[in-house]
Image (cartoon, rainbow, N blue to C red; front, side, top):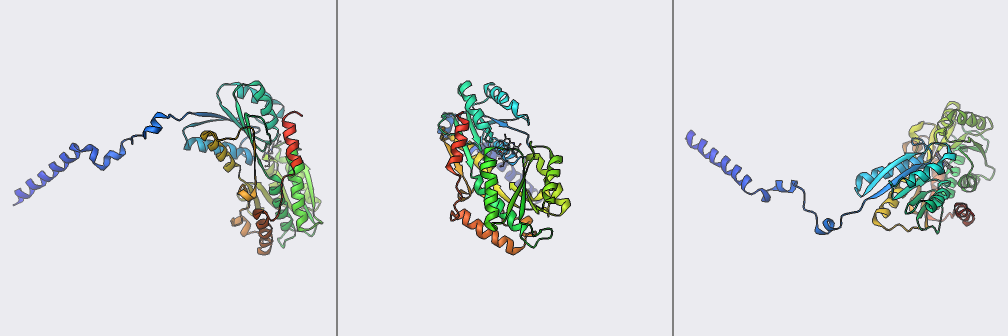
Length: 372
Ligand code: RBF
């Protein structure tokens, strides 16, 4: 009996081995071998697009540039038609045009993707000198150049929300908030977007909370000196400011140091920022540079970019937003303050509160880019 069982077992085992060897293509394991590509994708070999990312500064503390580089790298991992190389040009702005020209003339790229309003005019110059190269520029507004596409965020709207939030925090019952109707901003340098959209937007937002609000500003003069930024922030706090904004790249760290040692508040611009200093950074207004970059790169790969045009995006289409459920906001800011903010925020995203970029500002940016 034992012998019979042993023989039966052996027969079953042998027949299993035989079946799996004899029918390789019919077994589930065949699906692990490379699936045959559909004939269309075999015949239309996707062409590669080589994109050079030109960072006008350094990566690490500048939300628009970090988002640009990170999104492009992420996109290249997801789509093998995209090849990406990132170049950090550094803070010496007098070198940028030369660096950009040689980057474009290197022959390594089909398209250069860069950011900020000073780079738009440089792109216009470079396309005149370097044949075939194309440019996508975030935070720039240029129309009519058929090798340039720009994306412009409604910074007036973003800054209005920023000022509105800072003024509400300043008038709140939060410890450290004083009766003075003053908020502050430390910023990197003068440029049209700062002077004509960001600062006026913050002022309009604060005055919408209370017309008596005043915005005190301090210019850093660069995008990296955190020590100087700290001293500027301290001066603003001495003047009665109890909630600060920071748009100064690596200088922002100094604004946080001053605010946290003096027990006042910071609202972050473009990204969440709560983790930079929990309890000091208590709110933020977001600008989704990453989404815009991904969308533009997707359009580039699909061949649907509208060269020669500029795309304006804002809160109504989800490119500017506020993290209303973030623990850093919910746990630090009293409910009535958050409620008041949310009411205004809803008006902005629904379009009830119209905060358009003045056409004269767009015209000014385009004219500057065309060298007019
Ligand atoms: N923003 C930064 O966060 N870091 C920078 O290094 C930086 N450099 C800039 C240089 C120039 C010439 C200009 C016009 C803007 C710069 N910005 C920088 C500002 C940036 O474009 C954007 O306006 C702000 O970051 C707010 O979104």
